[in-house]
Length: 81
Image 1: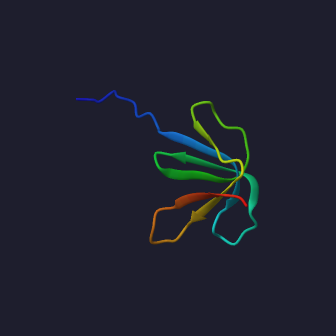
Image 2: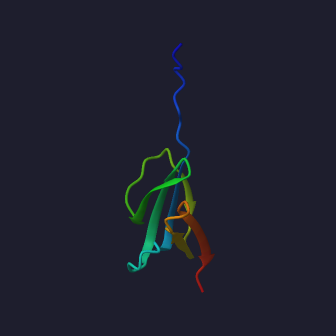
């Protein structure tokens, strides 16, 4: 028996925050994170995104990523001083 149910991805875009990716690279002003089903698919400079993303405006906040090999990527944000 075939299951014809289509999986609809849970897509979230967090945009316009100061992005610090945890690699030692310079921070990205107005950064963008694209997350699908809880997994970061993109972290970098702002770019066009499709309309099926739930958008979270992180203006005035700093987005910090932890990319340790023993954890799933984690994100936290704080207000910029």
